Image (cartoon, rainbow, N blue to C red; front, side, top):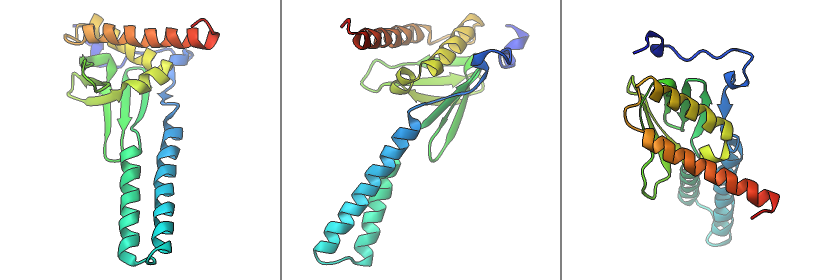
Length: 183
């Protein structure tokens, strides 16, 4: 095994891939989650006030329900840099060394998430919709996964990586054809 494999890949600072990439849609999805939770709170308090009137217990229940809705709807925030991918939720931050992947799994079931495991045991789960919506994030992940496969640190996952690449490239091609009016 290459002794440099324990260090992150070096990318020239002038290379645009050197910068970190973030999920471009996260902020909008977070605002939507907050808006839905806020709308539920306002509507429920308005209806409650119009009925029997607001009480402290009912107000606290509506607030708790709105906060729960926000927590459920808030998506994980995904960012990547050469050699790393980070998935942050309200409760956890998971970082995986993508240039030292030990496993990449994309189950064929209904759940559309990619599971990543690095050589140090770091684990993260990235939703397919995030990769489809952020080509630069996908390209960093794919390049690092292929680097891991070439360095033999990725014994399982090459088939899933190829299947994932075909899916993302197919969706991208369909989008291009649709936008250009060819489909």
